[in-house]
Image 1 (tube, helix red, strand yellow):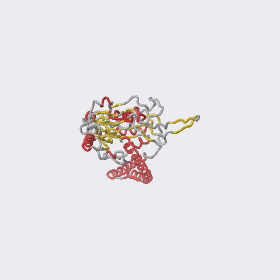
Image 2 (spheres, one colour; image 1 turned 90 degrees about the vertical axis):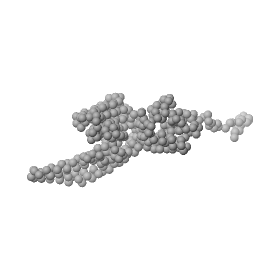
Image 3 (cartoon, one colour; image 1 turned 60 degrees about the vertical axis):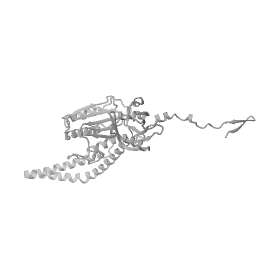
Image 4 (spheres, rainbow, N blue to C red; image 1 turned 180 degrees about the vertical axis):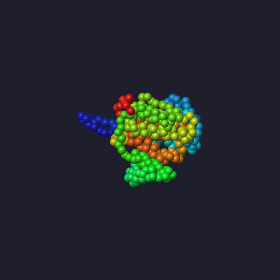
Length: 386
């Protein structure tokens, strides 16, 4: 209702406040383009007819390129997404699926959730929405690894007190008895001493899981990789080919040089052992660095999410990691080797977690890749010493 306002004895009519109309709302196309989730529409022949900006990044093609492509051009024919689309067209209802792997000539996505809905306005057309949950999964795993590391640290503290002290006495007694024994019994004394040393070394390794503060600074990761490569080529990987695929413009990592050497040396050694035990022909280890706008992680004391744009990867062409081991790969005491303690990868995950980073692994026969995502050193020249 209009309101009456008296001005100078004359009655004036003031119009009511104008309410929002359809013309005031944003263009629907602009809203779709701004959505952070990849969204695409395919027609009855599974050809792209529409895609927002996020979908362009997801598939690695611009909208102009996608309009000349079909799903079969970007995804393998046995991709489970095709069954999902067929189910939507047959039932006419919205269907969702999770933990899908979408792979093709230029696409490799894991842990993808997809929702598909039929568009009533166009026969056979399907609206597809994609959600990449791999980053969240990696973060969940990282938190689990850190919890497991704390458990190992607590166990190590108990063992150091309850085991190492009497172990030293056992070893000392065996060492004193050794010269007084006949040769056959002397071997048993040596066995006691060696086994005591092995248990002590295991407890020492477990103590490394303690929550000790790390001294961080700018680290040139290429110098770290160069040092690791020299150690590998003069020792355990002398029979293998090591390839470098580096981004030379990569800025400095915010980290501890010695601990990063320990992490990468462990990963390269694991790759070499996998190639050796798997009898791989033309065994090859690839060291990779690249800049990638990856996930942001909340780090204690940071106050805001920290970007992890620096990717360092170790890849091998070995037999791959079995499906039953892969989900537990970074848990303590999990190993596939007879002489392994199962602490190496757990310690790797713990160190990377202490750096505020993430560790990911992808594996299939002929290709296993351990990928580290690390923070960059703030306001640091690219050629800082490592």
